[in-house]
Length: 413
Image 1: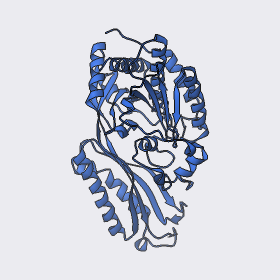
Image 2: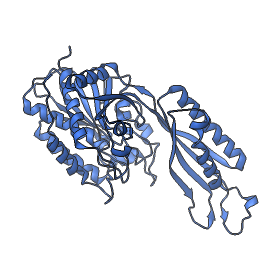
Image 3: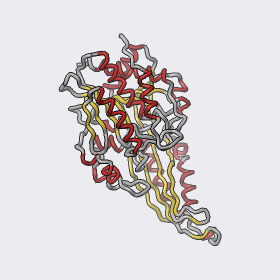
Image 4: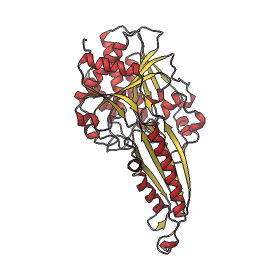
């Protein structure tokens, strides 16, 4: 097979130009619906105009930019990812899939290749959940998994609802452009692994088989606030102590129940009134539970809830236990997976079939259209951190695999 190649210098230059836009000097902080997000959209829109892409933006700010120079009436091959980040995040997470997808379109446009299917670049809004604590809002909305009423129920740390924030940005006046099987042939997302496997084992490319399911649970432990110096230890109802024990025991669930792929994380915690000389009134924290095995995920969730009940009883406190977000365990489509595998073998690219512990917008398309993912290594397994890095030699190999897979799909009847 003759290899068509992406222009890695052009891809790199655009990626670095965008990553210079950050609200913090350390790492990349580019939250959805922020001024930084708006600046990146303006930059990308110039690229869309240059390539004469048909651009649609829905009520949540999701972008669909279609390359269709021959005005085909066939369904699109979709690629892309997201441009938002966690606070002080890395340069490659999400954004790499967007600039790689744009580079694929650039390469095809310059090569004057006839297509059977348009190519559609998608940019999902609010993937990281940094604003409201719920991941993949944009893709969940585009696939009809959440609605406008749901957006009115979730809030940021300033108690502003997702609906109000998005409305203030002007997106709520747009039309809806939901993803349907009739207009999308398949979706291929290009992404960094965000873990250590490819780097440790020496692969430039991973082809994703399963994407972990994720459940996000809010726990609020409510005790009795009082003076830190005058309240005897034996009569306290201290929710901070209860939270400490619960969080510690959460970290042992995987081992105690032999859940080999299960991970449980508490990454956000708020204590009120949050003064050093006051026993707290309540402690609120968020539990992230993930697995690629259905039974193990169910077991983990049951154990988390059992532990919550035990802690409430032991410390004689009140509490709230509420699931605020979830995504199902997903097996990627054989159609996309096989197309990527066949192309990799034709090009002589060494690859690894693997699972994704991170959740991705790609998973939200499950049951609607065929979908799959191409991974490239994260050096040292580091992600969601300013040290996040992927070698551009690996990005070039992965980008060429994405490009040639899409071209091969244009030969499939």
